[in-house]
Every structure is written in structure tokens, then in C-alpha cells.
Image (tube, rainbow, N blue to C red; front, top):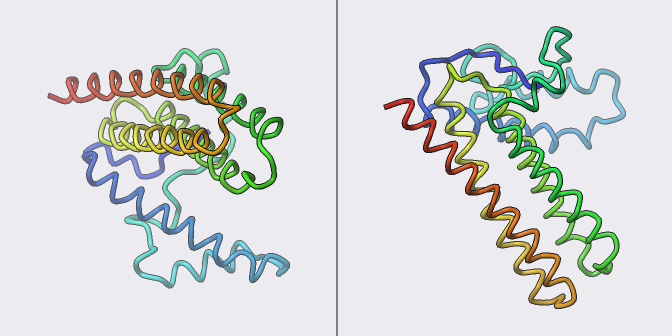
Length: 202
């Protein structure tokens, strides 16, 4: 479960957006460095030390990344988590992703592999954002709003990429139409939740 380490309850959505962008830069740079030292002992410590020497990649506070994924023995049970606001968005995104992967494996040939895999990765990004959003406590509305805006952006991008598939693969039009309709449903839920968060801030 992702836990926020900063606890900047007073940060607004724009401050969080800036921090998330910086975090994504750190993650991207981490994976750029990884291939060169993947077989070295203590490669993670080596990479983290290297990144800490890059001023534009140093987090706002402490030397930790934005989210920590350590296990939390005292965390919510599975049923409790699924009852949290926004968990239905996560479950719906996972379901659509699974259907897409099944379609990719069964209906699309090797010429579509890279394009299809990029969509799979974007689904993973969307699912990760929904988890972070659900896990964020209500006393951090700025972070929730920033994550919801990114969720909406990811959904819009997914719909666009899926629609492009139908241009060259007419045989999957009906399946992709269903996926896009389900993503639009996710989008409406995210918009409703975003509006609710903004009303609560007013």
C-alpha cells in the first residue's frame, strides 16, 4: 500500500502536481541508470546515491521518494479498502485492463505488439494512480485532486490510443467500443469525485 511520507496537508493541488512531476522524473532517471548497473552488488543504493547528487531530482524534503510501498500490517483489510471512496474506480480500471490484455493476446498480431503493449503500460499507470488516490486520506485534498486530474488525463489518452487501433484493425471495433464506453464511465466517476472534492474545499 502506498503511504505518503510528507504529510503536507496544507499543500494545494498545484504544489502536489509539481512534486509528482519531479517524482516521475526521478523514477524515469532510475530506470535509465538501472541497465548499466543491474548486475552490480548494491545497485539500488548506488543508483539512489547517484540520483541524490542531481539537484533537480532531490525531493522537496528528505531523501525518500514520494510514495513508499512497504507492507503495513496494521492497514485496512481488503474488504475495508474496497469500501473506500474511489475503490470502485480502481476495480473498474482493472477489469477493463484485463479484457484489453486478453484482446491483445488473442486478436492482435505481432505488428501491433508495441502499440498494444504501450496501452497495457498506460493501463498500469492508471491503476497505480487510482490506488494512490484511494489510499490518500481526505485531509490531503490537494493531493487527491492532483491525482484525479492525472487519472482523467490517463483515461483520455487511453481512449485515444484505443480508437487508433480500430483504424487498422476493424475486426476488434466492437470490443474496443465496449472498452471505451467503460473508460468513459470511469471518467464520469472521476469527474464526480473531483467536483465533490472541490466543493468540500470551498
